[in-house]
Image 1: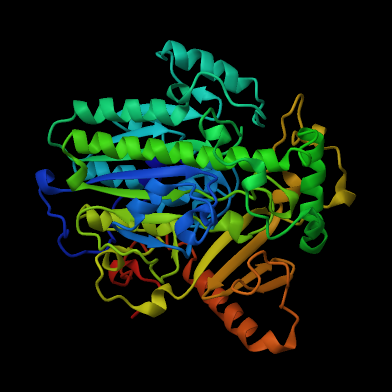
Image 2 (image 1 turned 90 degrees about the vertical axis):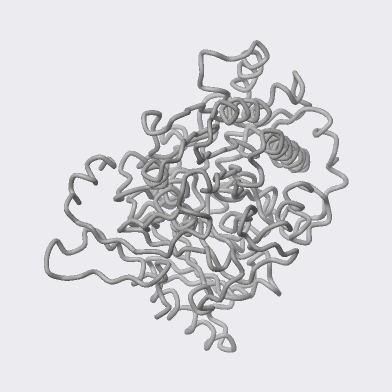
Length: 521
């Protein structure tokens, strides 16, 4: 169901949250600009501020300390399309109906972020990877880039040759330094586009989704980034390919398919990890360039910058790369940092558990707009401003996964090529029937994590003692009380996250909490 149809269906229903006047002013000239910098498939714990030994993203770390950052931030689902639609609509995948990368056109909602920004008088832009329900006719400036290059006829000469090179990688990797230098890389060209567009604006506030297609595969980077983190210098992983036997059949199937699609990937695992680290630093330098452009144009002081990822990457854990199965923290936990006017600064992470679906309602309140009906996320504005907030509201967070139905197993056939999971050349799609079937839910609360599926299979981990999630305590009698507490919390989340639309058309008055809180009264 398209957004235009949603508006028609819900015409005449006016149920929204009346928020306080925007802390940033209601007049256009004082409204803050908003830039969402999203990286695709960026693993949160590979940043030095998270305790990682290597300094992969020094500028992002320094920017985080100038604002508020969360180390218990989670995606709505560790799959690009569902996660991005959830961010733009503030709704979980079970409400948007986008539970796979192949259901994006089914996005179901009343208003999304770009609708609200337009209503508030903001100029809007997408620069980079879309992979959501957003379309070019809904933004003022549209400059799409994807994993195989820029989707435009007006490329520079270096852009043309580099994008042709990207297509030869078949969505896998280049084990050697990529050619043409950093100026050919997509994030560099995106910064140029962003600078040009911002420079063309008058005093009108703007919303920009700056959506970087990296460090997602194809794994490639040029010098000097290729040599910055040599394979032998990388910290030892906390898990190995042997641990796939502990994690279960889905992980073994994923590895089997990956071996067919990416021949020799296990032998290249350390080099793939090294390239991924180099991509992080390349991205970081381009984020720094973008911020420098904002300062040159005199708009930095009135711009809120959100740095986030849609989901993570195994980066060698369990002997895997990319994503595909499970709700492990390497895939589900994401970086989230807010910087800008009115946002409190702290070198330490905020203790709240937050979600990618909380972004839209937060920006609504920043813009001085009502939070649309159907939004399930909570506004983080009081947290960002250092004000009091109900701690119980943010003591846990939920993640969803799976397109539904029963699990496909090895017994259901293993012709991965017929399925389309493994193609010609080096192509391999890790998001396939075997890895995405079924339904799973995850709850994070403090150091504890619960994963539960439609068959009643449970996993319980103490992330402080077991960060790789290998010691399942679900059947451990000594953990029974925490297990019951986590199940109760997950049940409350599931009930609270039932889709509220359509609300009653007459007589009944639909009530919501301030800031769209789910649990606080």
